[in-house]
Image 1: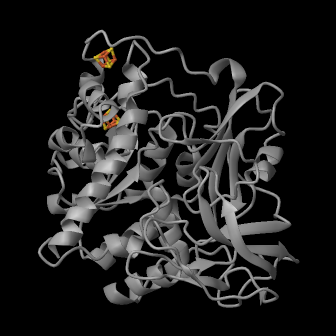
Image 2: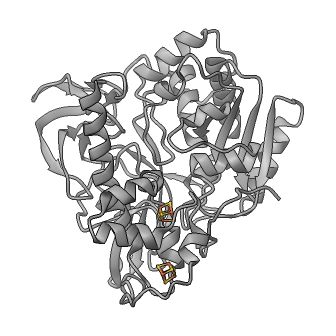
Length: 445
Ligand code: SF4
Ligand code: SF4
């Protein structure tokens, strides 16, 4: 069975919410909508305190090419424009809205009818995706329009839909595939038209046999969309790993993934594109997996952006007494937060509540030079060496050893028998090396 060639691990899957259908979360009474729910420049606020908004009203305009529009997830009144401390401790500008009723912009088609035909041309599709604030909602939150407009010398040949969901615990993409397969397929057709390719692969790991079966059934009559069953292996959802697994091509260090001829889009993004293009619906809600071994009602909740994570945890049965850690995302790439007021955003794929008995790291011991971290690294790096170089502040050698290629997947830390905090060091060093590289590039201009 297909998978990527270098490194990777297979952590315990713990997909506790597999089989949980999508449940709408209760409407929030107040939302905090941050202006940077995407990679790139924060959007520019276009509303003021006291303004009345509907669901879908534009709140903030993309500020540059790599940025994204942000729309209101509720109807109500803008009460404040301020900064908040986000889940990872950074200050972010945000719009506070007190909800009143649930009144939607009239332009949004809320009728549950499948619309299969799309008369827009490629440019109009990309403009629509841009207007509706669509970003990659698999986790990267890269503005989708940017990925659909590759440099002129790079011609996409195929579309790859990332339906891998290799992070333990998360099942939001799985639930979406089971509930919205027809809409996802129309979203794929729209994407193919936008980038002018004639073949799509949908990569799904073998632990989702019902989703594989359903999508195979829905595409059985056509030869332009192919479902690819993949072996379970983390981090197969990484763009470079998925391209390798599906079409056997490698993205060179520093190159764009499209240089291989493939454009990768997450399956939930394909659904968001269907809603944006066919229903005029901006990205104002998403499916969030709220999970944990001690939660009484873990599930896949359809949540409006900007609602506090506390409200989603409440919907899942409330914070268990034995909670030791709350993670935004999955256990491998997610970030721990101590702030229950953290608002959900376009990139919030999951909220994981970890019991205290499993929340603590083990004491690190000296490296025994077993090279397990090297074998596990999907980017072919030497994590033990990189972490040592960062600890010694030898950033020059760390750059020579391609620390910038690290995708922060955590496979090295996960596989280390000495429990060395490898990724912590590498992430720190990578940030510093990339800042040096950016400064050097700016000097040359
Ligand atoms: S976190 Fe970075 S160094 Fe560690 S395994 Fe992943 S890519 Fe390699
Ligand atoms: S896995 Fe841990 S102990 Fe083994 S070489 Fe890497 S850092 Fe050292």
